[in-house]
Image (cartoon, rainbow, N blue to C red):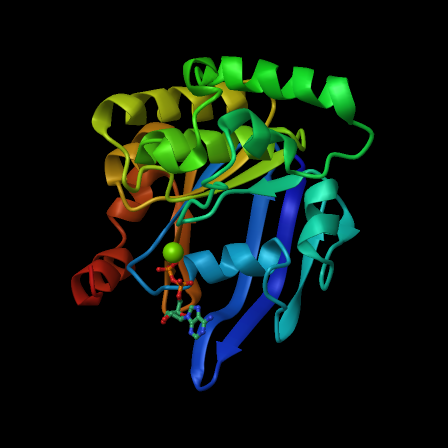
Length: 238
Ligand SMILES: Nc1ncnc2c1ncn2[C@@H]1O[C@H](COP(=O)(O)OP(=O)(O)O)[C@@H](O)[C@H]1O
Ligand SMILES: [Mg+2]
């Protein structure tokens, strides 16, 4: 196995609060890693640090053997590291197809870009709503559109922040199938998720955060039996 993403001593403070505290992560190429932890444990902040939306106070991030610490979100995305957001934000007035054409895709423009957009929408079963406005989509369709937009960048690693939030059960199955398929076609996935059924069903390995720190990692069964994990959830806000 080879490491695709590694963080060393990643730390981010907001005033007196240490949101991410000395975080060391190793993500292996090809795996689905579940990132869990009570509300406020620093999961989204870790994503923001890795994808360049926040700058770490200290620490180092390496992706595909290159240091990406301090790079912009655009530079990092161009390297093939894609992410979705906990709160989806498609362009409401643009159609689904127009939303797909917004990401800047190196070497892919004009007709070729539109062809790729249509292929991805078809793969994710979004063709029936291709002409609908972003604001008229259901919660689940918005999540799917976000994944579709990330795929425009042809990423090697996809970081998904709570893909099940606000999604009805039928579309949820669709999203889970798509995450599995993306992984089977060679993409590494990091999944933040509070729905433990989703985590159990998808993750090869689970990483648990609490108060900004990684408290343990292992299989779903292993972390479930870990007393630190139980204490974190019992003592946490969730
Ligand atoms: N931009 C910010 N400014 C100040 N505090 C923040 C900011 N973003 C997150 N936090 C705080 O950092 C902690 C971790 O938040 P977050 O990473 O969103 O946790 P999670 O995604 O695990 O629920 C929380 O206490 C949160 O309130
Ligand atoms: Mg979060």
